[in-house]
Image (cartoon, rainbow, N blue to C red; front, side, top):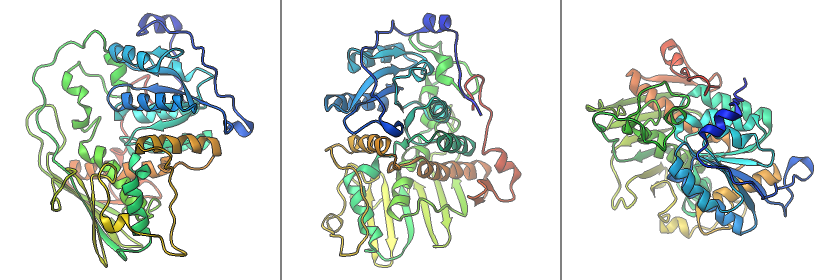
Length: 438
């Protein structure tokens, strides 16, 4: 497999969003073993700087002020976003419309990807093949085949990959994890998730792409289609976003699996039902229920949109753990809303289970990044390593696939295939557009 894509330099210079500012920031020199030393800065590039990507860049600027890293490059297919990102990043940062030129730089140690979901796999594999560590937003992939390619590339490269399910670095989720892993609910047999429905519809007639947007590069691996502003709302299209189950669901499944120490366990069956999308471009089911069955130990996860929210419901979505000794509600994904009082006051007993997390910063997003940087420096796994990210994404993907096919799927995690269902297995992969393919 080789996704190294190179463009003629003349084409790049003609299409660059702005004249590149000469980089005057030195790379973090690598210590022995190919890892930065304790006092050395990492040099990073940001790819995708709108929305969450803009927030990532802001956090990197804070890390730069703390003396932990340099920001060498920012990349975006939208010229206006790119220009704003250059101002945020400050002197010594080069702007690129095409991320591949940032990957060619020898001084870049790590890349932070906050692009639409359909780009995650190709960009991650490409970065790993270029010798970079990777922080990639969730979900890690949109197909099972993409996830397998990412895992293979990570293993071959030996580089660190952190998936952006930041709840694992948040205090409320960590408190819940300690509480559950120390058996305070007893055996957990069921976990339910509730969330608002997907929207229906989508705007009417399309238009020409705005002058500042490179539409071809935004589409990337997706099949070609004429520009429509609704496509930029990629979250509500099965092909690119997969709805709230592949958005917030990826966060919530990550927390569930972590708190129950089940990163290595996979569902043996997945069964989804849901309502048909309304008229318009958005094709994700407004309402959907998915039942995931696990065995040895036996338990189940039930995803429902909207589902039945517990009393209060301050976060708009969340998780309920049901155990032998009662239930525990986690609002949202264990990030912005404190855990229950009994969980906050819980003290690990002698000989109890400890679960480490980085807690150097007030912001859990900063802690998640710090965990990534420490993993690069030490060679340990990050808290949301790629295998865990792929496992969470697999639940999202299979839930949508069961809904689309209208039948229950039996899953073989070892072979990464649906048992006895050739049609379903064909849909675990899909063609990608040249030259943006694995």
